Amino acid sequence: MIETSRNILWVDDEIDLLKPHLLLLQQKGYDVDTATNGEDAVEMVQSKNYGLVFLDEMMPGMGGLKTLSYIKDLLPNLPIVMVTKNEAESLMEEAIGGKISDYLLKPVNPNQVLLACKKFLEAKKITSEHVSRDYTQEFQQISLALMNPLDHFGWVDLYIKLTNWDIELDEHPELGLRQTLIDQKRECNVEFGKFIERNYRNWIDQRSVKPVLSNEVVEQHVLPELDQTESVFLFVIDCMRLDQWLVMERLLTDYFFIQKDYYYSILPTATPYSRNAIFSGLFPIDIERRFPEVWQSGEDDENSRNRFEHQLLDKLLERKKIQLKPESKYVKILDAEFGRQIEASILSYVKSKLTAVVVNFVDMLAHGRSDSALLKEIAPDEAAYRSLTRSWFQHSALFGMLKTLSTQKKVSIILTTDHGAVRCLRGSKVIGDREASTNLRYKFGRNLKVDDRQAVFVKNPTDFKLPRGGVTTNYILAKEDYYFVYPTDYHKYLNQYRDSFQHGGISMEEMILPVVKLTPK
Image (cartoon, rainbow, N blue to C red):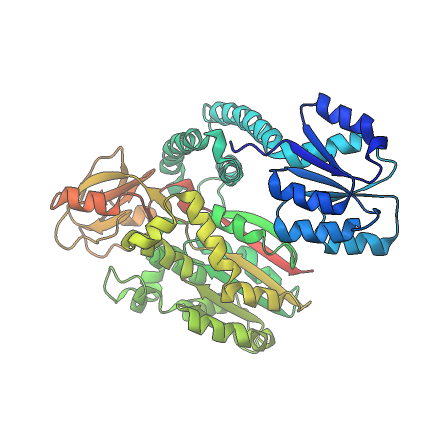
């Protein structure tokens, strides 16, 4: 951990009256220097490394506010606590405008002084100690939870805890707990894979209590809003994990009341299946039967198989006997320029009762990282991947659209994703014929062979409500953080795709997804 300087500078023209405070700080292990005027204080901060400055507001010669200005010009990040007798609101505002870190009124209480020192000089250390202690306790609780069967609610709660700790540890890399958390997440995904194997078929056949699945998202979360407000927006961010949503959410709290829920993606956790299921309200096998044109394109061409989302949404509304006037709108944003055009015109869509917006950037980021050495260097791990997502969102057309819509009181926004992605670190050797699909986390084709400890083998696609294709078509779905590699040039592709973000298989990151209601403040 980088230690904050424990050197304190106290600037006051009546410094002798503050000796009890100075002695207390010295007893607590702080090194305290003093100055009786602003000129000396400015010279001292240039010649010595201070972690904190206490600055009297009323001094002869260079006053406190002017001294503050000089010091901030030299050291803008140096914490400065203003000490004054003046309670005038205008002075407080002037001081705050001058970037003071805190404000103490005379006569100063020793506890206030000590609290300020701990806040600015020891906060990181104290917080780190608490984080380390709390995570150790949580680690034990999660390990105990894995020893007992969890239902789908329990897995959501566990995944939320792991994700929150993931983000918390981003702020405390010095603790060395990251690998412990990674190992625990891997252990959880082993058990989660077993849980899905035991329960998924019962869910899709309605034979047990189940979570909301992809094909129920619109019915459960979007359609009820049509009766509650004048205009509903459905934003689907392709390939957005829960941790990515949470870092984006922080930027939206000033604009919206945020209500979170969760659902499970269908399998495979890939765009042609999961996103088509969202817009159609159907499982893939039923889409194939009712709308064969959706599947007529090349089997591996994900984009072409998602060309019909607007039509599928309208057919869903038709089946639910919902007639919209004006008709629903649909926008798919594939590049930044088009996104800016939609951002500029987003208020025109408020006239429609329902608008669906698909945003593809996060998916392109995941796949682009696999192919770009630069992106891999910028985002070498999941913490950096989250940071990159936040940076994109902060400057994105999507954020601009949401901020604009936050000014509209009669608008309801549902924001979700079709699937997440998992960081793939282990290769799984797979054998199949030449016609087998090329996806890294799921495959379909004939004569597929794979280690059943690393993947789920779906002999009969109809058991998973998947399109059959041919009589002998099978599916395989990767578990945990495995990715499929053919024996031909095995080591080449093993290395090429190791440490890439992929989707299509079975993991908490891919399957447990947020669905959020944003209500303008």
